[in-house]
Image 1: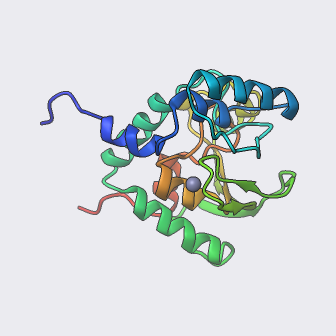
Image 2 (image 1 turned 90 degrees about the vertical axis):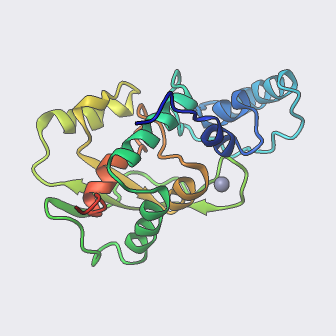
Length: 209
Ligand SMILES: [Zn+2]
């Protein structure tokens, strides 16, 4: 048994030298780029951080408006650990899936669908890594309950309820990088969340006893 878990190393790796307030700001939804630019520079000054060069803001956001990045990432870490998987395994499997999405063999009960969401071009890594990616495909859980489908819809409006589970996950070209380098599956309250539990099941990555 572990004593009180210490997540300081995980958080340090997650931040990658960027102040938490700046990173959370970059990840949250933005509708007015001009205003956000002003807010960003204000925040950057407050955080004594002079190079907030990330300008490719996401309208819908990588994180819900009021979500805590550290709480989210610690929660995801626990999910992965409990399932006996790793960030690396999930990221590698995402790469394989992206290489051949329509012939990749998903676990039974999952199927692949075209990414029908409007793709307004590519999104770059909010950590400023110069990595880009657009929508690839959607993994759908067959016979999803009404509640999981409803939960997917709620996430468009930032009200997703984690205990209801998700009916589908949108895989983007940026996702393997976000998982591998930043331990990030996007916020629970965004449409773009690639729920780790969902991916571990869909890719058959549970620990084999
Ligand atoms: Zn990055």
